[in-house]
Amino acid sequence: MHQFLAQLLEDHRRIRGLLAAFEQQLLAFERAGVPDFDVLEFGINYCVEYLDAVHHRKEEQLLDRLRVVDPAAAVPMANLSRQHHDIEILTREVADAFGLARDGPLQSREELVTAGRNLLDHYRHHLSWEEAILFPTLRRALSHTDCDRLAANWQAAAVDPLDPAAQQARPAALLAAMEALFKAPPDRE
Image (tube, rainbow, N blue to C red; front, side, top):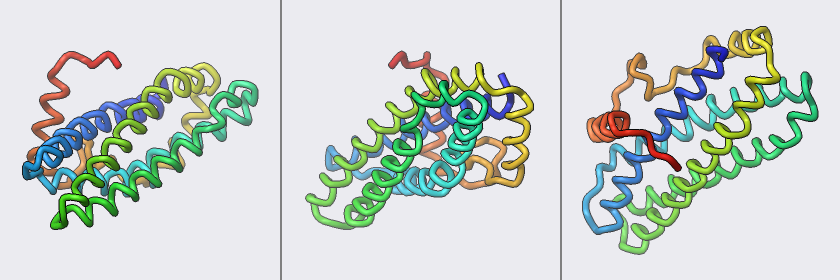
């Protein structure tokens, strides 16, 4: 597998860890506990600043190349951009609900939990779809040269803030939750 595709799969592994940590905080919030707002805020910012702006654009460029080299194989992937757009809208809804809920009334808490669960469900479905349908198709249809050219476009792109090599502060609760997830046996969704 080309390193560019392998990196996207590694992103997915970290995204799943973030989603698990985010879900733990939503559960605490739902039970009227005090969540780690830094984890929630980091998760929302990560979705906007990295996933929407970088990760999804890489996937869409791969799909654009697939449309050139194998248009028939690209047909079942036609809704990728729509999935990304829907997730961006859901992320904004969570960000808005988070702003209201941080110091707001119980109704705002319920709105955040509902919006957050909706986002989690969509993200998990989306990741599974990409891993089962999109990535295998890309591996079969795209050459190493295709991937090399696309990877070169992203040389200066932002590093995934969840990548251990990134020099970015991450909430301790997020790191602990992700570490626990990665030590656990893989979840078979």
